[in-house]
Image (cartoon, rainbow, N blue to C red):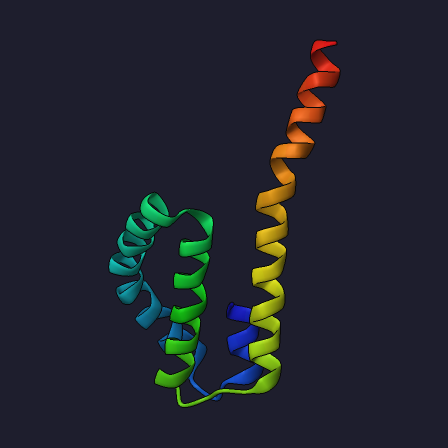
Length: 96
């Protein structure tokens, strides 16, 4: 996200990071709660919504940054779905 913010925002990066640190603790607790109730899809939804909220707060929204965020989210979904399959296969190779 820092890469996306750096490339698509005129806000000072240090100020953005410091504000992010202050805001992140309650958001992390929210994400833990949502993940425990709704799983990875719910947590990922919170991630995307907080990214959109951050863009609104910085008054900077670009189509390219939105597409990059969507692509990152898709890779996370794919990773979450494929990682158990790969590790199950790898563990099976070591056992057998």
